[in-house]
Picture 1 (tube, rainbow, N blue to C red):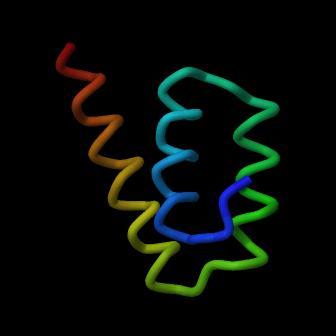
Picture 2: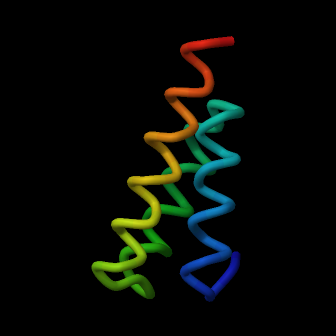
Length: 57
């Protein structure tokens, strides 16, 4: 489990793409312990961008 918020953002984004519900839960629990507001905003941007790309596929 990564400790770096940037690595967690990447791992969460990948888990969302793969629909790994259990993994998403574990990563988000870790994320809330190590991340700050800027990390949360980065996660939101990554997930929003991922959803937009998926909707055009």
